[in-house]
Structure formats: C-alpha cells, structure tokens
Image 1: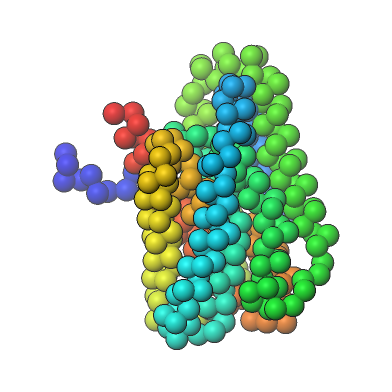
Image 2: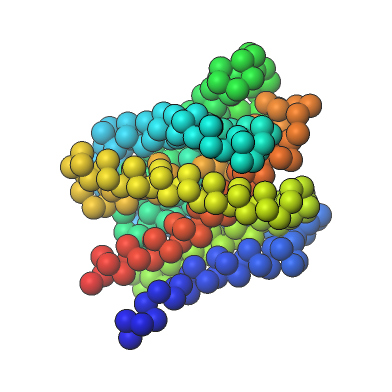
Length: 324
C-alpha cells in the first residue's frame, strides 16, 4: 500500500539499530580490537567479490572515466570547502568557533572508500568508477587535506606525513589487492557468485553495518553525548544535515546537467557527498594537537552517521527504482 511507502526499508532500519546498539552497548577494549580485524576482513572480502563480479571491460571503463573522476574530485576538495567558508557567517555564531572549525575540517576531508563503493553497488551505480574514484580521493586526501588545513585553517606548515604513507598502504592492501585477486580468479568464482547471490548482498550490507557500529561505538566511548549542551547538539545536527543536503542537491543537479548517465550520477552522488571518519580522526590528532580535539571531531562524527543513514535510504530507493 502506498500509505506505508514512507517507512524505512530493512537495511536503513538495521543501520539505525546499529546506532542504538552502539549507544547502549558500545564495543571497546580487546573486543573492539578483534571486531575491527573482523570488519577489515569483511571489507577485504567485499572488494574481492567486487573484483570477481566485474568484467575486465567494465574495470577499464571505470579507470578511464576521467570526467567522472574530475567531477568527484571537484565536489570533494573544491565545492565542499567553498560551502564551508560561505556558511561561516551562519554556522560560527550558532555553534561557536571550535565546532565551526570542526565543520570546516570535515569539508576538507577526502571521501569514504568502502561505504561509498558499497552504497554504489547496492544502488546499482558504476562500481568500477566508484572504486577508482573513492580510493584515489582517499589516497590523495592523505596528502592534500593536511595542506588545505595548513593553508585555510592553521596557516602553518603541517609536519608528520609518515602516517599518511601508512594509511595509503593500508588502502592498497585492504582494497586494491583483494580486488585484483578477485579479477584474477573471476572465471573460477563466477559459478559460485551466481549460485550464492544473496550471500554476496549480505557481504555488501553487512560490511556497512559493521563499520557503522564500530565507528559510533568509538564516538560514544569518547563521550560524544557529554561534550555539548542538548540545544547545541540539535543545532549541530541541523547544520550537518543541511550541509549534506545542499551538497547532494548540488551534485545531483550538476551531474545531471553535465549529461552523466544514471549509473554515473549515482556514483558521483555517493562518492562526492561523503566524508571519511576513518582517515579524519588520525589526521586530526596530528593537525590539531593542543586544541579542543573532541569538539573539532564532533561535527565529523555526527556527519558520518547522518551520511550513512541517508545514503542507506537512497541506495535502497535507487536499487528498487532500477529493478522496476
């Protein structure tokens, strides 16, 4: 019945359930360590399956789709920072200087990797292009974001780049290596993938749920609900939601205006509108040493959860629209 069409789908409900579970029972200590290892295994398996599913021609087309990659790069590192600066007269008086600094910092971060690609896959977008663009954004962002922060925020040269090489190495080992292995074993894996399509979907969605629970558990343990007043938290939620909505609308209409097909539009939307918590937290520890670190990270933590919920809903909507 149409009257219940507004209700969230099962996957979106599961994402919200992970947020509630992390708030009530956050995972920590040794359990969190082992859960993080398990999450990494799930992510590696996700990219192995993507490599096994995709044809060699589709991968080459994804790599060479330079217009799409340029658009996502511009959305991530040009449109987002400009929007953060333009909204300063509204955001800073409303939230204060520390929280505005956090808003500006999230605008300078690269895109997420695994969730961008997983959502693109669920929504039936251009997965090879998403893999290339989101991974490149994250690797480039390891070096570009500190430069942007030093130029636009601290106005100081940022040192300590060695950890960036480690993060880039982790991206290659966790994402590209499994993907390449999947490509090499594609002919062997095809019968299994066709027979167990539901299991492949479970890996897609399960990896996202694991990332949500792990990330929000860490935020809860850090004291996310005790650092600001309830009214400021509401304002921050509104600002983060508005920022995401504005960027998604700009990306959607711009990509449509530039003539990208529907699959590419989905890829651009999910890769260009998201910001990484996984890379943002360790970089912030270096870039903002001695500053109110918790408050600077709070906007990113909330934005990260909002984008996952929003993209989860949109991915399912796009998937159902494609199937009809």
